[in-house]
Amino acid sequence: MNILAAPPTAAAPVIAGRSLWQDALARLLRNRAAMVSLVVLAVIALLALLAPWISPHAFDDVFWDDIRMPPDFVKAHWFGTDANGRDLFARTLYGGRVSLLVGVAATTVSLLIGVTYGAIAGYFGGRIDSMMMRLVDVLYSLPFLFFVILLMVVFGRHIVLIFVAIGAVEWLTMARIVRGQTLSIKRREFIEAALAGGVSTAKIIRRHIIPNTIGPVIVYVTLTIPQVILMESFLSFLGLGVQEPYTSWGVLIADGAAEMETAPWMLVFPAVFLATTLFCFNFIGDGLRDALDPKDR
Amino acid sequence: MWRYSLRRLASAVPTLFAVITVAFFMMRLAPGGPFDRDRMPTPEVEANIRKAYNLDEPLVVQYGIYLSNLLRGDLGPSFKYQDYTVVELIRNGFPVSFRIGITAITLALIVGGAFGVLAALRQNSLIDHAVMAVAMIGITVPNFVMAPLMALIIGVYLRLLPAGGYGGGSLRNLIMPTIALALPQVAYVARLTRGSMIEVLRSNYIRTARAKGLPRRLVVGRHALRAAFLPVVSYLGPAIAGIITGSVVIETIFGIPGIGRYFVQGALNRDYTLVMGVVIFYGTLIIVLNLLVDLAYGLLDPKIRYD
Image (cartoon, rainbow over all chains, first blue to last red; front, side, top):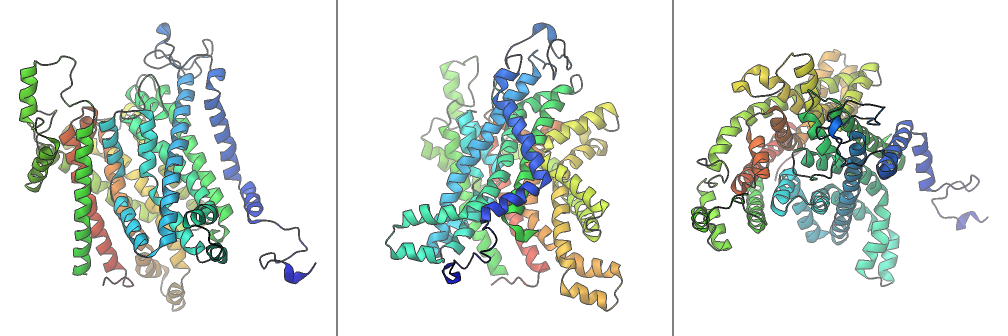
């Protein structure tokens, strides 16, 4: 094999070549906290997804004889029932569906806005960049939750609006990260080659810039999802999020907090589910960061 | 430095203006009004109410009225708390929120800073791991889970402190809300301090200080701490925003009559003027406090010079 023909990055051709991604995957697999979190999270997600088939009761069935019943295995109320006599196990799983769905959907919205915004600002640079980033700085300094609440008050408490509202305020950090990446990528040779080849600006950004920012973006996505879930729970806790009969972990925690003196299980089970999910996402995010960006170790 | 402050202030004004404008038109475009009740009043009564709140004017005129009132420090009457203006409600609530908030921030800086330094000095020891594990819990477990749990265990089971209520502002009633509000910030500050302290302790000037035989207490206390605290100072801006947001939940859970609770009540009752007033008030507060934090940062870090 002619050594001169090998690309400069493939330093040792004797060892079977390992791509950056294989390297990262190997490091991630060695991270015990991240792997355990991944398994736990998968279990929670499956439970939520398969809720109708797993739970013996429907989430809105009222059991008039078993109101505020502590966890009970004879009647299959594994987590007990709530103040309206509804099965808490079913409600926790269905709440998980909503919480996880909001987490993923709103993060997708923030991903779309943030990546586009950041890539455009970074690619054009100069005055456009400084104006666009000044706007981000300004928005950063505002108490966003208040604006989301304002949105909820104004347009009603619809679940799609929750996705949009949360996604629309969570894109700021994403935009900063992507801009930083873009600034370093746009000076590289392959961009120059694309320019020389007459590729349009929109296509350069879409095909050449954005795919190369993916590493840090993935890390930040895993850290955004728990933030979004937290925000939705926060809104629902205050009574401004998901509305009855639908539920989310935030709603369940709010109901549980109101009944905690007589029915503590109503607070404990949803709280444990929420906290575990948030923990898992954070550990996976940390693990991914260590795996994709080894210089921090 | 004066020019820098002025420029920052000048950029804050359009921001605030945008905030007010967006908030106003969003509120007015909302479906349903603040006077929607189950029992509808007679048309004459309704017309009178609408007239009293200027709701019969065109939107642009209403906006003009709101702006000119705002400049005179008048945020209008509350739609739900009759006989109260929004400014009165904010004036009632602010001292309460401020007292809890400022204590929580101080607590976060002192306790979080102390634990962070401790963990950094004993890196990878049992203390370090314990502090970081607790900090992880403090960051991931949201305050609306932590606060009811605290109220349940400390207030209901152990009966050490009241589980809720303001108690006319007595200390016993404020201990738990303040701690619940401070906890996430304590955790963040501890993590930040630990990280930067470890970095600073590796730097050359610390090695020099050690080499010339300074006692460890002075090396850490006089030389390292100042540099290690810089990231914490720049975190103060987000910390203040976090405390303000957190106060909404904490005040609701513990039944503290601060601005946060008025805000939630207002949001649930579609009290337009109150919600807008609080957004504008807190927006201004955060912009001003961020400016102060930036200026303080410049005083602490001689490497930063404002042109």
